[in-house]
Amino acid sequence: MTNLVGGYEIHKSDLKRGGVHLVIGTRHKPSANKSKRYLLQRLPNQSHNYISGLYPIQSDHPDREVYQLDFGGSDYTLTLNRAEGIAEIRQIRHTKKEGENKCPLYINKTFVSFNDTNRC
Image 1 (cartoon, rainbow, N blue to C red):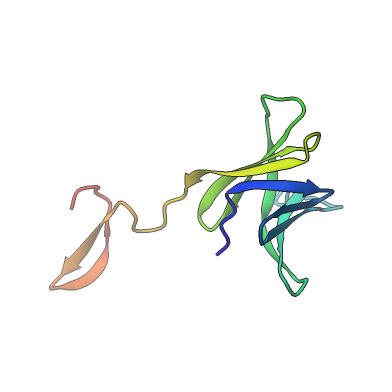
Image 2: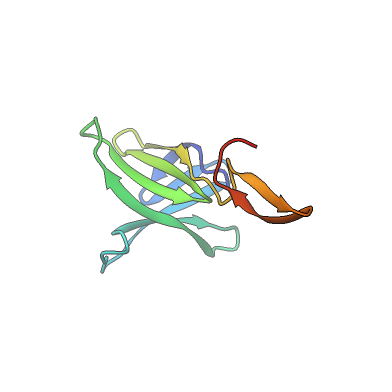
């Protein structure tokens, strides 16, 4: 899985950092379930992997575009500063997977489920 966190150079709709090449796409017919913009990863063979929809959020700076996205069980922000030609992706929250911070429940040494308590 690609590590998205870090700074990028902006070239039109492309974001580049080292060997990571991301592309911001635009849906011509967004729907209630699909955002107008989305993020793709361009692979070396010129194919693409879908990363996430980009959901605009309020920015404290009028010259910056800020989006929220989710990838690999975590939430991120993408900040675009087109005037300076730079972008940054930051992880803002790790989404818990089933079983994290829960204690395994065993009956007769056989795993049954995860207990909802935070104490083991």
